[in-house]
Image (tube, rainbow, N blue to C red; front, side):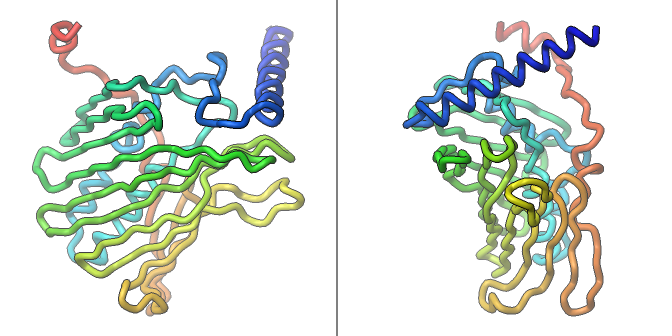
Length: 288
């Protein structure tokens, strides 16, 4: 059994090495790069987007609407934004959705619908609402890959919009970029700056997904997130400081009082998740 595992690992590493070499030597247009089927996850990119919304251990979207004041609601939106950042796997990617493909999931009070609305460039759209109508989420985004020699960066173009109907607030959110490092050591991580803006309340948050210090590209924690929350009218006056790791715990520090609280706990939010199950099989049978 151990010999078979070693042979499988050897072939997997060899295939990944060949793929990296093909990128670095032949790739001139990454939008046309075809990933070998060996490296495809058994799910569509639409499902990956949707899982970031409906696969959660606690109702983070509902918490956004239940906030007592605008500041509490903004911090809840920041926590939800961090929760959509899921650990990527180097060398593996979901299948590219075809034009017109849809993905629909209803889980608890949340209804999520995704559709591939464009093939070239690839554009995915998402619409989600809760049963009470307090939360409405809309986004339309497209990944734009760029080759930087030793790395590939997929910049996510587009913007997410979250509306809290009960409070008449609209939030605009960015998304971090996916950074695939080829040298000196292959890895994949989220990087870049993210803004969460609510023009209705005048509050804003700036987050930076970054890697801690490393030696010649080796080591360091690639899952750090840091930032602050402030009033858009007085950008130099920080209300809260945000610091932590998006796959573990992110803390929130009140600058005025020095009090530190937990903004986001990944173990509670996305730990021990269960696969959504089909409740009404008759509906599926009718569609088939």
